[in-house]
Length: 108
Image (cartoon, rainbow, N blue to C red; front, side, top):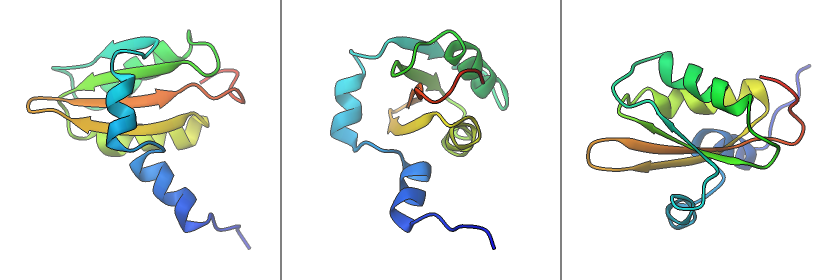
């Protein structure tokens, strides 16, 4: 029988580990910016994957995207690659999504 994740963990996977205030502080402190505005699925995730491959463990990336699909695609990518999905900030014309490179990940 497959193991079930606790609901709080599942919530973190889908909604992110940080609240809006914590994410807002990351805007100026992130290590990498991935600008995927003007692109559509799967390009924002591909650009994120390419950037993550060059990031050190614990580094934080901010992904700029105007494709709302990133809100589903990025958490799913983080689950499949064991990176941490931190959350998303909704701006007027685009989204700022944040991930942290997991120390357990050696390649994506």
